[in-house]
Length: 261
Image (cartoon, rainbow, N blue to C red):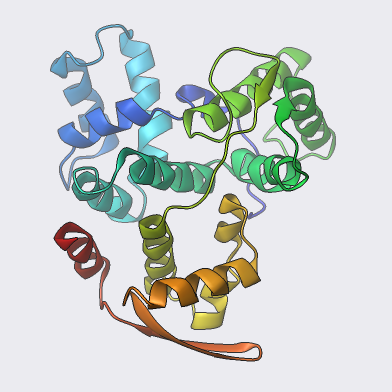
């Protein structure tokens, strides 16, 4: 992950999967975060939340994840939520949430997948707390955190992982590690998004985002080859050099292909 300082903003909602669906229904291209906040207040869909909590949900939860890059993530997700399965859609929310919150990105890639690949069946809050304490000591946080804040952020991390299906739900000190594998269309989406972001073919294969799904370069290359048989692209690989013939010229074309089945 980038060297962005760790913040506590994950606490604005953690996974907010259902809330994101509702906010995408309210959002249209050109609507900024403050306007969306007003729409959410008036919608009646968040009656169990105070006005302050709704504002935190929109301004600190939804907007940084999905309204960056002129709202491109929200544009894509608004269409995709009616096309993708619940699990596929949730994995995309997971991707964007990790990108936004560097502490989650690093926790997943450094702690969660290490436990997963070691065939562990559970992850404890104490291990998560150790990660947060170490980050605090190493100066990775936006400011020094108190013991109380360390405990809260540790809870945010485990709770967010549970929201996205990496860990079991429930307020437990030890949570089961759940089977978690990238869905095929999520793989295709991420590959094309990286491509259209300006990454060359070999850079796409080696991009750090794949580690969010427990994949290294060899795993990614194998999946590219498998999905080439589904006509998502044409791939030629020899030694360390790989060339990919991309079948779609924009994310909009790709999403339309998803819709066509």
